[in-house]
Image (cartoon, rainbow, N blue to C red; front, side):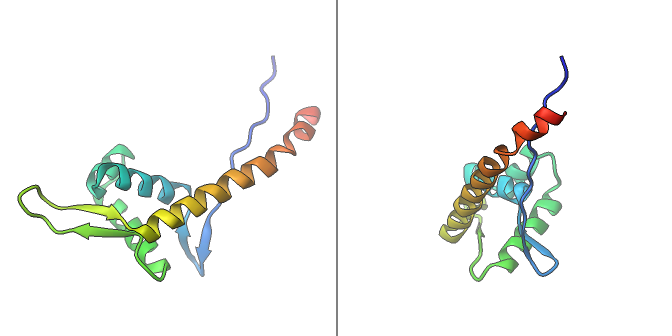
Length: 115
């Protein structure tokens, strides 16, 4: 049985040459929100802490208000939290992603027919 075509959209929001947010950064934001830690989120994504921090810095620099804030350590140690602005940007991005995928899926039957 021949394979069927499938969609693989990777929308990115650009600010000049900088990717303000895309699928990987959205995943990173979700994991930071879930774990409360940039380091833990990076590990879950199999990336270095340095790379994750650079992505967070790029996101924070692209928007008027930061998406992620560091939490100063204490007895329980430090961490990070996704700000309200970050949660709003993430929700907006995910909604856009779903809408784009739904619209693009309308074209799949035409590709399948010709595949």
